[in-house]
Length: 151
Image 1 (cartoon, helix red, strand yellow):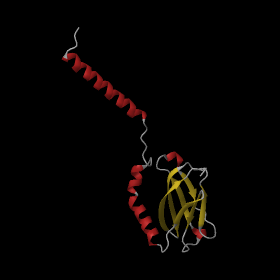
Image 2 (cartoon, helix red, strand yellow):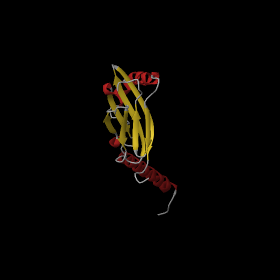
Image 3 (cartoon, helix red, strand yellow):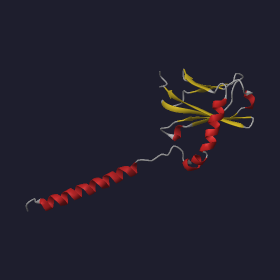
Image 4 (cartoon, helix red, strand yellow):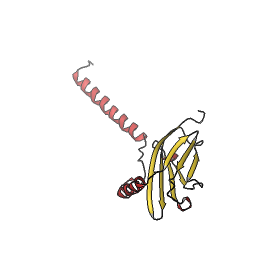
């Protein structure tokens, strides 16, 4: 039997269908992660988050977030009575939600909170600080890069 143009068309269709099947199979093997599992309800709270950010920007001195020598330091402005601060610090890992860390705000007498980064994986984190003081809510965030623990 000779190879003719009919055989070529059938072969091309078979290769195309097999390639598409392979692409579908590979696509289903990868997980698709949303930034948050409750993405849509959070979207409805977006204006509240804008208000919290604006409250933080109105402060004379905003929260200071820094990373040095494997320590994340968060400093609150002196306008607050540090014993009345309530809130949470989130170390948000964009590449994997399983590596997010949540810590309650517990400052020292100078309004600083230190978080030791030894247990954190190397890479990008977004430090999100959300707090409440005398019925007013605030939010501030900053990107940091955790270096290798041996550096």
